[in-house]
Each structure stands twice: as structure tokens, then as C-alpha cells.
Amino acid sequence: MQVKFKLLGTGSGMGAPSFFCKCDSCKAAFENKAYGRTRNGAIVQVENRNNILIDLSPDLGQQLVREQVERVDAVFLTHWHYANFAGIGELGPYVNFSGRGKIPLFLPASAIEAFKIAFSDFESSFKLIAWQFDQEYAFPSVTIKPILANHGIETAGFLIETKSKKLAYFPSTAGLSEHSRRKVVGVDWLVCDATFGKENPMPQEHMRISETIELGRIVRAQNTVLTHLSSHYIGLENYLKLEDKFWQDDDIIIAADGMTFPL
Image (cartoon, rainbow, N blue to C red; front, side, top):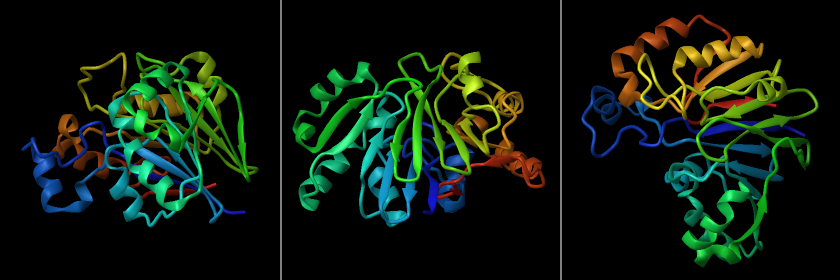
């Protein structure tokens, strides 16, 4: 059974272009969609049988339309920050119109009460399940395991495994503990937070590009994929230099919206 991991969004919490920003990167993104990034999120697709979303960005609706996703079977949230849960409201009408019943929503235990306060109107749309670190959740042809991430609040990355491939997805983290590193040694793809360029104003929550590349080397990832990129901080000129630098580098990949990895 064919399994695919697809990046729905690869930008940081502001996305690009942003309506309020006139930096060179946003100007370029207004002129050329290739430089645009919707906010962070991904989907695991098992043929036409299961679509498992990871994070629900404010851009979720347009992401699902763009990728022609017509059903959602489960959701995992890495953590309870606006850019990662705001798309919950997009799925409420889907549940009502599809008549498919509650969608399993796996989220941090610490976020369940916040969900009930913020989305009381949608409690009938979701079956809330508190994920547990290092516990394996099995779906047809694929398993998903939350691994501890460093992001200031209760946060996970996810180890996604099939019989032949392993992909680790850590869109929001400030490095990994030794315990978490051991869990992802030798993965085929490390898709990881690479928010900032040379300067990192949020070192307790996010990573610089050079740190992400080094982490990939430490865990011996076959490929390191730079995601959650903030073009506002990296700058257009530096981003273009990145593209040139990694164009011939087989194991360093700059993420893009819609990029797909066969599992």
C-alpha cells in the first residue's frame, strides 16, 4: 500500500507573503508564488484510504484545496500554538457535511482544556485523545510516534514509519535531547525546524539553519529537510544563496509547499 508524506506548509508562524510586511522576501513572494510559503503543516496519505493531518495551520483550507484533499481521517497536533491549531475551525464544517462522525484528534494532554474553551462549538466534531511521548499509534501501513521536542511548552515531533522508510518531522523545536536523538538515528528524512539564518531571537524555541544541518549530521539522517523557514528573518538574498549552496547537495533539501516524500 503506497504511503506518502506531504508538506502542506513550510513557513513559520507569519507565512510569506504577509499582508503587513514589505520586506524583500514578501515583495518577491507577492510577485512570484515560488517564493511564497503557507504556514507549517503536513499530511500522511495512505493511498485513498487514510489522510492523517499533522498540525492545522490558519492556511489549512487553502492547503487542502491546493492539494485536492477530500477527506480527513485523523489529526495530530505537535503543540498548542495558534499557527498549529487555528485550522481546527476548517474541519468542523467538513465533519457536519460529510456525516462521517468524529475525527480522532491527537493532541498534548496540556492542550485539551484549552481546546474545550476555544473550540466548544466543535467538540462534537472531534474525539480528543492525549498523545503520549514514545507511544506508537498504528494506522494501515504506517505508525506515528510522538517524540519529545524542545519548544517551551509540551511539544512533540513525530517519527513516521512504514516497513521500508522512516521520517522524523520536527517543525518546531530548539534542538533535540539525547533521548530524542536516539529515537531518530538513521532516519531516511529528518524534516526539521530551520526557522532562522545567522541570528536567532528565539533560541529556546527554534533553530538556525546551520544548527539543523548539524543535527542531521549527528543523527546520521540520510536527508535533512529544512522547514518552518522564516524568510522575513533569513532575507531574500540569503535565501537565494541557500538555494545555490544546496542545489548540488543531495542530502540537504530546502522544503517547499507541496513537497512529497514516498514512504
